[in-house]
Length: 165
Image (cartoon, rainbow, N blue to C red; front, side, top):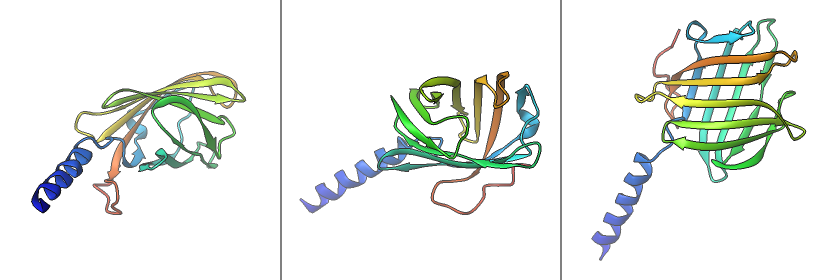
């Protein structure tokens, strides 16, 4: 009986590991592969996604073209409901829906009004995130940004995979 319980426990753990969200980990901005319309792109950015009991937690920090550091974070589920965003002047809620194992779409709002739409795709090899963001910039301009991030470290590890410079 113990062997059967252990086998079911191990199978459950294996299924959890296989089904893990590929976005989990730390990601570094790749300016050479990104395109900002209008520009300019940030000087740098790092984002981290982690699984929590309340959903996917996203934290991050970027340095814009003028050298100003900004950050925002949220914890949300892929259920199409609004969740609070903290630390952002542009957004106060986010809604996320999973399209497939590698793709999610988000709607970012400020005071109930849609400001941006984003599509996040994790490459099949799990090493690149491409964010396509459309909406209105902080200066009120129409924007269409394709932002690329390279995987920097695996979840639960402080060891970088490689420096994606």
